[in-house]
Image: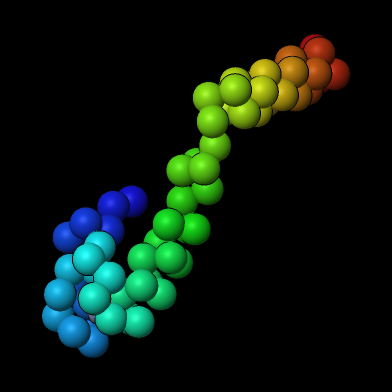
Length: 63
Ligand SMILES: [Zn+2]
């Protein structure tokens, strides 16, 4: 999700420029809506490992 091309309804400027309080609020909200933006690669690897372990466990139980 990118907000580079979003135009503010309040000031008609690109939201990414943050010209008015509405722009800045939208920018903050959009940045927080992307949960993977703040994750570092190590966290992603750990999440992937947990997912694989869970799938393996389920496959073992159903087999
Ligand atoms: Zn604005």
